[in-house]
Image (cartoon, rainbow, N blue to C red; front, side, top):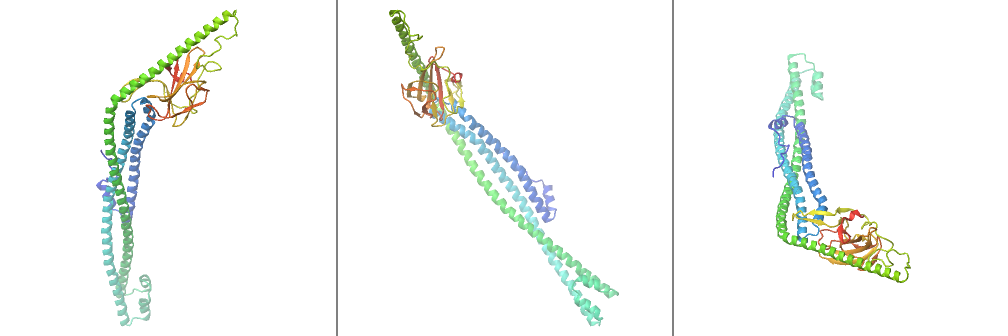
Length: 465
């Protein structure tokens, strides 16, 4: 994996430029350079990591759709596919984090080299200034000795009292110069000697100030170097951890891929069994509807014969007094309410292409987001035909809602429930709790798989909701 080149890889001419400045200015320039480069570099690394995190988030957002595509698939295969999806979502983020750690390590190493060079330069300059200061102190001492010798000679030469007073009572070199009258060749020599002393003292003061500044720079550079060592160690640890994680993820990816390949045959067999289960349900419901209609016809014929035998009297009913089995009391079904209090569709009715098996099949219902234990509601009045457990659909409540105004049989099925709230043969009212959502059967996560049967065959539930 290539690592982004650190902007701290300075050209030689920029390094020479840093050395050519005064020590304090150089360290300030260094701090600003490192800080500015690090800030821009951090922005690039943040962008890299953010892009990987967006990719991972996109995978997480697609997970619900993937779960829907895997519904009614072999449980072990579905689990392996979802786990592989999670691994492949994390892998680019781990790789981005490794790139960040490696780049941070490279930055720290380059910064360490720059700091080491600046520290060496500052220490050399410190030694030079210390030596100059020591040499200068000798000049100051020599000049003071000359001044003292002049004072002694003046005293022995019976100089006037005022001259002697100026020499011995002066508080500073400047005071001595301003008060001493240079009127002879000897006086000019004395004045020159005093000026040399003044220059030597000024030079010494400047060197001392410079030495103090250099030592401050050395201290600051050492602090920066210590901080850089800590950053480097942290980056090294992060890089080691991310490399180990990436190796683990790649190994997990390979293991899951093998597992998926091994489960394909079982998954295909499971899909065929689920299709047979759906076909069996439709056949069963159509048989129930046929028997209901046959019974209704017999009842209607019986009432007609009774009316004829009684001279044609009628109670005004048009379809007989007994409603067909499962028909909701109070009229025909005209619409269905939603099966959850806060309906959110996660997968619609229609053909699905299996992402692993490359197999198209019918998704015979609408999936609603329903976290584990969510109450599932009856969508209309009716009678519970079945509250049972099936291989693919898991815990199922199948309700006969009677007939539509057009005479079509209307039945609904709520599947993958974690538990039942009703039993077979029980009458239910619209909005009544019939069970609680779960992930029983061939399901990858808690949700509601809701099916609508019109005349015993599945149709898109959303056309009635």
